[in-house]
Picture 1: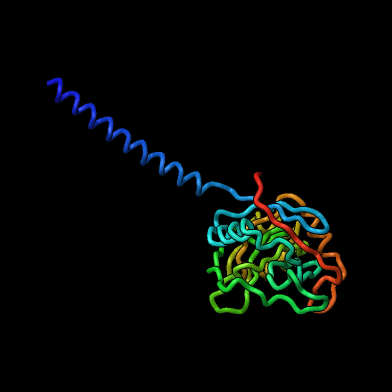
Picture 2: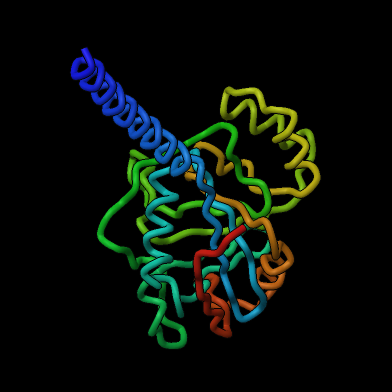
Length: 228
């Protein structure tokens, strides 16, 4: 009986350990899914901190990978349109000469679109640039940050008619107050937002630009993953 009891206790201990391990694995996976990534973007005109959205995991993970590899360091904001957005991420911009046409550089792959009605083009959002491919898949590296401008009710109603979808009150309020570029919703994937340094967007958007909306004076960036 004692041997049987000892064997039974050993089996129960092993089963308990396995169950605990499975529980820990599930907890670890859940924690990984809930982890929020932040990226600090240092520019010649100031620093921004960007929060990446977990609702767009393909774009989030790709951006984290590129930032970790130092891909964006020394690249330019090569396209700037005041009242609209600031764009960067073209690898050809790193060693670009003055007046060189930019915007065609890539990393050799696209990212499938990740549209989400709760993520929209309010001021400060980070979104993926793309070419005119029918799937609306994103560039693997080029991005833009929205400046936009406040919109009036008539403009928002026009956006609703065009999309065929009612606009949430939160979205409507953001577009009326902080502004944005509502006509881009459902066309380009939004995957993050500036949580510190919104004024830097305005500073960059205000610089003089030349041909193809390229700033006359080069504006370089450096990115690093940071804690909240």
